[in-house]
Length: 341
Ligand SMILES: *[C@@H]1O[C@H](CO)[C@@H](O)[C@H](O)[C@H]1NC(C)=O
Ligand SMILES: *[C@@H]1O[C@H](CO)[C@@H](O)[C@H](O)[C@H]1NC(C)=O
Ligand SMILES: *[C@@H]1O[C@H](CO)[C@@H](O)[C@H](O)[C@H]1NC(C)=O
Image 1: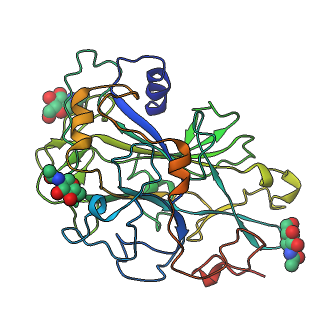
Image 2: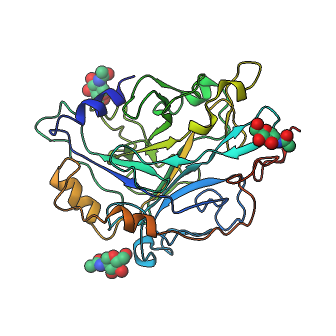
């Protein structure tokens, strides 16, 4: 697939404008202020990063993430956004589960769990840097992917959600739509790229997707034009989540039928239900200023904090339950039909 080859090339070619940064874990909890606002617990477990104003209900127009947060787990100190995905579990042969931890990317080894976030502005071939992007507005939120997708056809509606089986920390190909079938020595990297065309009006929509669109043709990376219904080109938000599978790579512990043992927190063993959520929370116009600088990773307009400060920011869990971080658990939190013993 194309996208990561561009990213991989971009890492040695500073003509590409993007920011890329690590974020430590804020909390792992059964909350979803976007899809299930106020519901404690929400249907499945998430791993969340970003500003510490994260809470069960965060209504646009009422909850100003930048004003209400006092710290963020992300490297840019003006970014109080919240970013999350489902959590990942390993299922043992006897049917019990343990949560798979996360680790930072190359360069962010010291971070606690979390993920890597990108805001991509243009594509490697765009040497003139003509591709302006409009930063997200206060209150903006979106999600991509669907936990109910269970076939390749359903997953293909979200073309840029993939998995990379890390042979080492620099592996970037191939990408697959379903979970890797074999043990991945350096972990499983989950890649989520969000749509890049905004309707220019609504900061949210009932399904949290339809105020956004993919380009009319081509991709963001190939400079595909935005459709007339969604004319505003925004940065391409991308998450890389690295699940550290080291403790679970012994083939003797894998299912006897040859299938793979990893399962999303909502019970998906295929991987097709890959999805991610975003609540914009950069302070004032700090993201737009960075995008206008058209810089590559090290941006003068981007204020940063050390990894120790990222790691020092966290919030307590609101839902008191065993999430399989210590011993083995009989079912996935909130998913009773995952109990198979
Ligand atoms: C900047 O953002 C903060 C937090 O959202 C807000 O309290 C403040 O009023 C903003 N300042 C300006 C100049 O817009
Ligand atoms: C289930 O399997 C795990 C992993 O092999 C093992 O550590 C655990 O003791 C087993 N639990 C039971 C109740 O057999
Ligand atoms: C993509 O759409 C634009 C605008 O509608 C059109 O000009 C262009 O030819 C299309 N490109 C391809 C490859 O279809």
